[in-house]
Length: 138
Ligand code: GTP
Ligand code: MG
Image: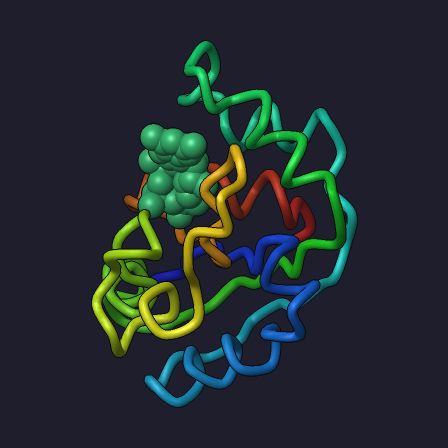
């Protein structure tokens, strides 16, 4: 079996979509292993987004991720990493397919940052790294 890190980003928490997003993960058949609402600090976010350091959207992205609470989730199931990416939809919520979290619930709000409701680990290596970062006790 496999685990992935899901984050409901501050836009999702603020809009009251945490329950809807968890519902979709559970309805797909995955198991919730850990769920914790928290405010992310610079240290965790710098490590989490290390691959994007130096890109133009990096600073606005980190600021956005600190702008409110984040719901950190570990979900489990066979092929959950690609399964959740499929549930989430593509990065840009304007064009993400209807039926996906981003496609059904997200849009462009004309802000500097792409606010796209969720994060999901993109590989087994990322999942292991991100779960250790957000849930060191797991
Ligand atoms: P995550 O699941 O959050 O990792 O999204 P992703 O894998 O679909 O995107 P990626 O890892 O490439 O980028 C991480 C986050 O940075 C995205 O979810 C967006 O919020 C933001 N982002 C990525 N690319 C761009 C971009 O070209 N412009 C802007 N403004 N933001 C971006
Ligand atoms: Mg990513």
